[in-house]
Image (cartoon, rainbow, N blue to C red; front, side, top):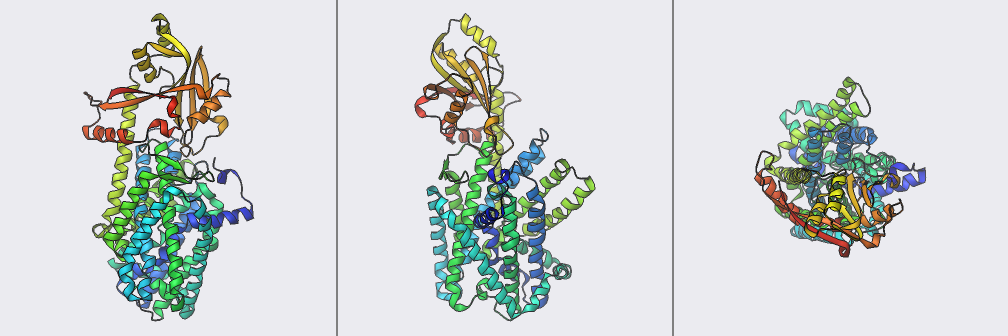
Length: 624
């Protein structure tokens, strides 16, 4: 169990954790005022009072219904051993029953969509922050795009060094950002206090009902105010539900409401709507410092998205839904401080490409929202199942509550789908590609495991045959990694067949990845000496943990197995995939892509931290 979930936080500690959450959890949703109101106003085509009151009301109540009620009020009450997020929820529901393809599909596609969001968020955030330069000096407009590309390049280039040190400053900077937004909002509201009538949901509903199809289309822009709301749930394991809710209700939500209301107030007071409305809240003399602060906030928001993509990638690898990628721990201070090079550089190329291709935050807003709204829709479906199976709610109550969320999410998703041809296809294409990678890898792994498990040989029969065949038993201890718990490891059979020898002591080790984030050390191991000097060992890990074979062997040595961890020889199979005839064969296109993935993924020995000098690779040809 994660520390945040296991240890109740006292008030000072919760306050400190809440400040830390500001920089990790709320970066995306906290920078949305930079572009959301301007985008919606451009979509409405007018700045009359009826429109302004309606739009501000919709923004405020979207924050209340989606973020406060759905995520903070309901989703964060369902955790997987302290962890949240759509993959953790999928894994939690998956252990309730076997063979639940619809739950798996919803969870995986929702996770894949987050990668699409991860590519767009840094581009639109940094662009919108730097567009304030147009207000300071219109001639600086030509430098916005190059500066955006340079900042994004530096952001991704910095990732291999880790974010532990700069991470300490994220919380205070974002606290300053939210306080600044609140103060600017109050300044704007003072110019037209009547904007506070927009707190009444009547104005939002009236706008939707009386503006025809235009109101429905505007929902796609309104939804931008809650992009990043999923992070409240996804990052729950890092900080705990209490600190995140405290930060949201105590600072983030009031700051967002005040700022949106302030932007609406100055437009009602006659402020021009050309350019970035957010910066018009600020006195001219303070615009440059505000641009600097906004840029820092968007960099932090981008960093949070990138870190989230790294964490989700590791979860998917552990659950067997993504090829093994090299995951580097960049700091000993926190398990979440990791770096995944392949994800980093691919995100960098896509993000900078989007910034250069769309050129303006207004244009990027057309591509933004589809991925996030679809993920929220998938989360609602899983929440309904959780209400029935975990909370044991009555069907009618589950339908009423989840149905409300579903209608809201579906409305936003349908409205966002109207942006499909204006750039909305970009995150969907990215999500489909990620989903295909997950699907093909998992399908290939299942086929590979099934093929290797054919014609199993019981351990007793195999060892008896060794004695009858006078196979030499050489000094030392051999470790064979195997998926088969009750039968002879295929790699061991192959090794004996070609060498006619076997070590005197054998450890057959199976690594099980559980559907919970963490496994307590005391529950890690199950081992038994089923034959003299033949040990069958099962080691369980959570999907947030990375197996470490040397550490595991050291633990095994303390459980009655007489081994020296430094004197072990690990035997690892290196599969070469070939085609197979018959009805059980994989489709050619899946097998071909899986083969490429298998050939280029990180070596199993590197992933398990096995010392290179203790490894023997055994090649074998497998038809699937």
